[in-house]
Length: 281
Image 1: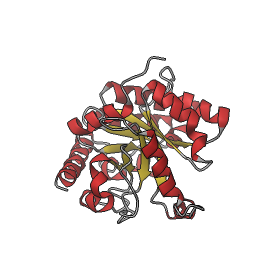
Image 2: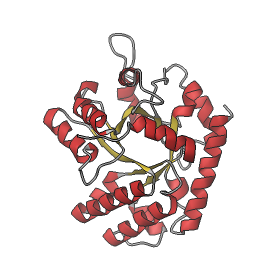
Image 3: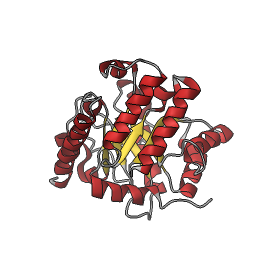
Image 4: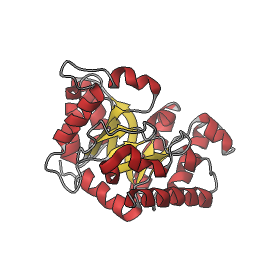
């Protein structure tokens, strides 16, 4: 299979040219209502199309949340397919937020759904859950390498429940979250200018200096905006790894819809604040 240039290289270039902002596409029922849209496939399609038209030609990354499309069945998935294709055509990289995780042939099938170059939902990267063991992700790792795509592995998430798994201490004295970061650093060894295998690390977690975030890969950081984290917080949270952070903003941008100019202006404000925070650190 003929692949693209590695995701990490494409992401580094997009971040340098457009700034590191990732805008989520999260068409949950309450946002559809705020936009004056019906909670149906028509509302879903208008919402997603509006976000793509407003920002896909200027932000580095768009991150659709697959669940909010899947809940409408096959017609919702068709909207997702179209949104992914249109976002990529406009120059944005697409991270599919599907958090897939399984073993063997099932994990391979999930990987083929999102990471095979000919798949209708082919995305530049996919979020995955490693909590059946990091090795369970091997089919996704292999196909991502082959196709030039990437992965974002759940490592240190901001939800309170995550700690009972991610902070659990292994027999070697290292906790599970740190173990996932170490696996990713190994995947990215020797890659440049940036590896293609990233971690999901919450921007709301405060000082993470006890973790080695230097994985030579991107750090997808949810929590900016509605969840309480600010762009100015990023250097304190991520330290020397801040240049590789991809801050995700969803509601902070989306609440300005359905006006495309307002959406675009909100995204550009966040992008500029993040750029200033990262470059001044």
